Length: 197
Image 1 (cartoon, one colour):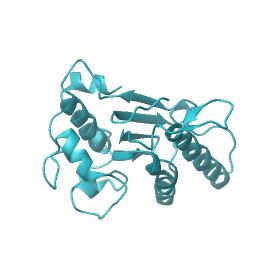
Image 2 (tube, rainbow, N blue to C red):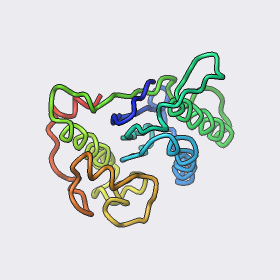
Image 3 (tube, rainbow, N blue to C red):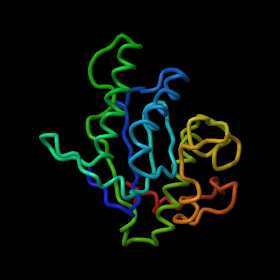
């Protein structure tokens, strides 16, 4: 994955064969600790959601994101390597916990740059992704209210938790997100959702 500074990306992956990747509450916490260690130092995280069998990140690349790791046989930027380390170390821990072997998460994490969309206005495109990420648990029928899902950044934006993983000020500025309680229950145009993949 190539990431270019000052661009915003939707990053997502899911369990191999759509299998569960989070088995307990502590698994979600463990994954977020690894996000803080391996991903956050290399970009600005704007939004996230962890679902039972997949995850979504909305990130903004910065000057740290473009750094390359030249000592590898394949040149990678630090964010790509951070995502690889996040997923491989998380898989190792879950495989030990569940007494299993093999891949837990699909090999290729997907990313889409949403800064260069020609289809719709960038802030609309980014906001669509932001709202979609936060609505994911509701759309999947896991909760009746968005704020009831603890494994997304929505609770931080709504002021229900003092989370520091996301750069909320940057998200509000570049995505045109309103106030302290983003209206994440706004209806998203289904046609716009197609553009975040």
